[in-house]
Image (tube, rainbow, N blue to C red; front, side, top):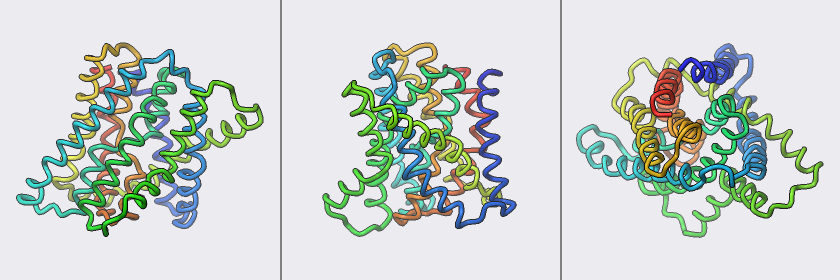
Length: 308
């Protein structure tokens, strides 16, 4: 557990640095907005393309790890959707708040996963996280779109509008580009490969700083059912499901550990951006993100050590 905890410390120190920069006003709101946009539209796609295009997918259990994570996400999504009538009837959870619960229980923070897996297992860890990115990112975005259209009171959108929003999402098209380059085999010209690699390097630090900047400790003065429910589902139940499915698929050793890392990281800060854009309860989403990020410092070492 000490090795896992040691690998987490740098990640959470960067998150703490982002929180400190925002809390002290060293970086103002407008600057954070610009950094967030550059990270999600330029830095992160470059990182995904670079990671997926160079990953030796033939040396890792793609179907075992990817299938376990997809199965876990689908099982969690089905469980949360099944809880929807109960949450509305007995606890007064409205549609926009439900979208925050759904995202909080299913979405994962790629930046934290990359940092921890790379720290523990080097290039193999990064290759396995690349598998997780390719398996989970398109599925999670598709599920999130459905939930917002169904429960957030959004106007009905045509299939073309939904498809356009889906394929223009930086998380989606970067996965498609990276996998295509990986499968085509011929490497990119060195100047282009170096260009993508250099930009991608900025994504990890910038993404973790943005995660920290989104934390607001004051929001957690009175945590309620949505906070506790999403923390339990995302930080405990989802890793257990993923680990069980991976075990059935014959995944072991470091491959199992990275599967648990991908499943046990806190919810992604992109969930807050999507909640603002699509009519979700953005305030509740920010609170869920804050609580999960803080709790993950304790839950991840335990789960990774026990299940990995």
